[in-house]
Length: 391
Image (cartoon, rainbow, N blue to C red; front, side, top):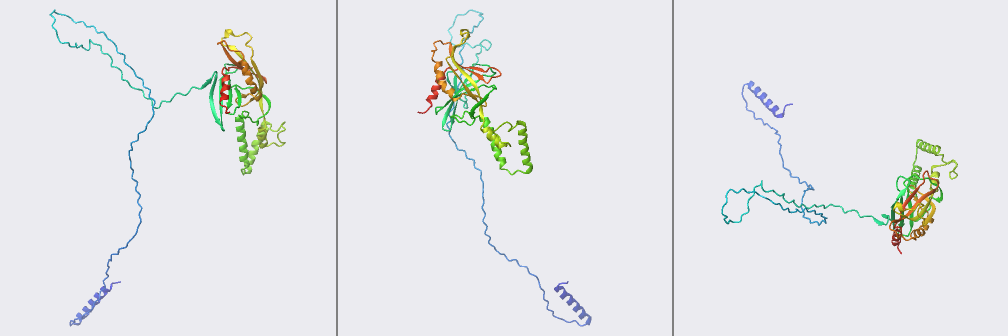
């Protein structure tokens, strides 16, 4: 569609043509109105309020002088050069004899080939060891006994004295341990380091004593773990398949170990819980050990053909734990009297020593189990245990 201005122009052209064709020109005033679109830009100022939080991280490196006093142990090794006296003999050929003329005293200059060159003295370089570790303190000894452990436990201290055997029938020498605490309690152990055969005992495993020495730690740890697993499984919502698998495991244990057969402690239909309760109420095993105290000569040639006479003897049942045997309370009470008997004969000869032997007499062992210790200083051990006891 043509614009309005073009329409007006075309109309005017047609009108002029028509007039021209009529013959006589005529003047006609035509008012033409033209609409022109006008675009006007009006500046508008709009105030916008914006809050901008600018965070700028500026790395700053600042050196601050700090004076630190570091105690150091410096070991200085100095090498001191020892002066050497070298005698040099020079042969000078004389071609003529002349009258001696006094001359200024000038030290003769010897060539390098004629004068031996002494090595320069070594440079003294101190050896600095700022990180040197002080030597470990030597263990406290009481005769043949070594105080190798002091343990704090529930408000009191436990001291352990160890003594390695002089002679034994096994492969490794057994260890004799005397233990005391600040409450005045005493006990003694023998770690035979070899398997031993034990018999039954009437002392229940749950029996308590000052050291809990009748508590077989590995056994009770396993027992507590098994009880915890049972409680955990009982609280689970097992699927039918998982419950069947669990029951199958228990059936295999029953078939392999004959659980409940011939044991009146278990129910007719034994359960894992009943087995754990039975183990908690079990009794310990024991062995009968005889102790003999005497003085013997260190020199083999001076030893008696029949052996030295025993000055004291103690025979009793020792409790068998996982890694050691432990003296019972009654035999421990006899130990003081045995020590008095051991020292009843004065040791006037320097070639003698205090000796204790231990022999497992029952039940019968595959091989005779005997060990011998030098117990010199056992009175000092007992005195130390008395000194740490509060009054």
